[in-house]
Image (cartoon, rainbow, N blue to C red; front, top):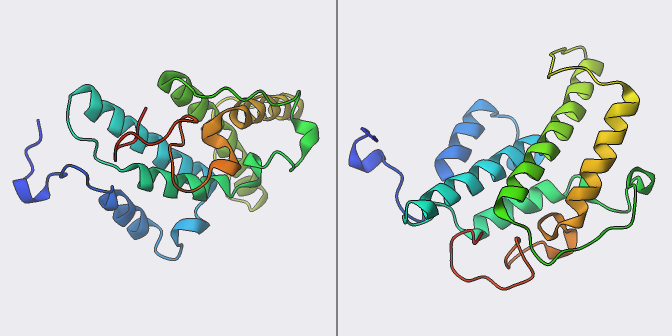
Length: 182
């Protein structure tokens, strides 16, 4: 139960600003676009989960689809989501379904998050800041997983670069309402 005073509780249709305010306090020298891709993906995943939870409780969705598209645009700036970048990593031609189930999207986002975090971990290790993220994979296993996950992500409309901007990022259909339509 939320015991915060009424003026501090999240309001319906709030654009998730408190999350970014907190994040900016933690990273004062970086602006939103300079954050690592895994941070953008984690923010996007929590936004979708918050909206799904609100929807399942018949409450207004706390974040708008415009905010979702804004975070998504920052995420898609990463070369990981460019099909022409390192095309040899992609094991087969892309297959584009018209939509994705919410549960499948969440699982796929978690897998992409793991790959992006491993990539960040490697960069940190090269700079001398070492931390361990799960069991170590061989270089060959990491490349295979990265290629497989990248292919799955690029096949989904949500991760398509041609779909940036306004509209419904979850399917080829239009936007039904102001919430993140799942």
